[in-house]
Image (cartoon, rainbow, N blue to C red; front, side, top):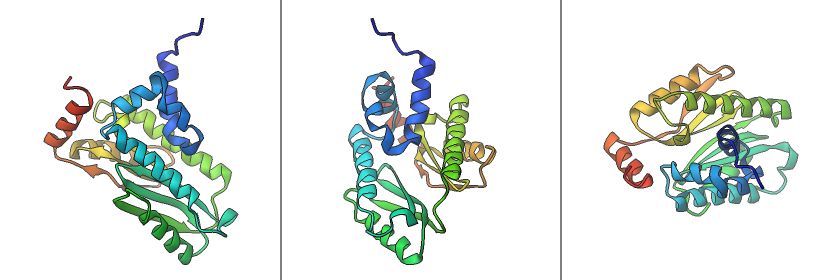
Length: 208
């Protein structure tokens, strides 16, 4: 008889899944962990699916010839797309930006690509670890729910995405700035008035 996953395992999966990008989409669409993530997200389930699709389209529409000369990551949240990583020149940066802007359903693009050699695997691993530390610290605070914040780290620069109130944004930024390894915090939050946040939460949680 299969064992029921422990709460600690579910929390670990919930923290790890958003940080591993395309490696684990099947993990988060079904089962107890996936249900919890979707249920407490302020985006509709349709928007969540559209964001996942936008990320996939970005990765699969990269200009030919970049190959190993670039490290390009696409992160979508509520139809806003962050493009981060490294490209060899300004022409490549602009080309990827145009590609991102042309993805169906995307309303805003944050082109944060740097002109630099591709980050090493070690550096990328450090960035994933920083993002996981931010998620863990968010989980420990009662000021902002970790499910409402999507952290992405590139070369020690922490990008914060999500749908939050002004108070929640300040709390998350403070956590990011005091997390070891973070060189800079870039605020990409969609900040809504408190009344709008309460309406979103009530709608997503069935009024509870």
